[in-house]
Length: 99
Image (cartoon, rainbow, N blue to C red; front, side):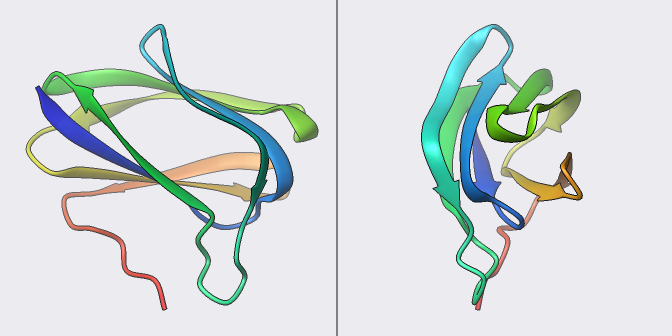
């Protein structure tokens, strides 16, 4: 097992958010809000096996849902944002930096 670091970043404004990895609900919060000064809302980690894992993100207050695979190898960081009521994501093998 390895650790997947997930960061909810830009565009959240009191949103109800749920994140699943595989079939497991790994995060749920009824009021996620981005701090505009730094572009950061929440961070959490989840233990996952190395290889491709399925991630599903639901922003219920915007009726926005997306699913995508993440290739996990060693340190993997996943950033999730909302842009124009669409869920977007990015991955990196380095931590994301915030002001």
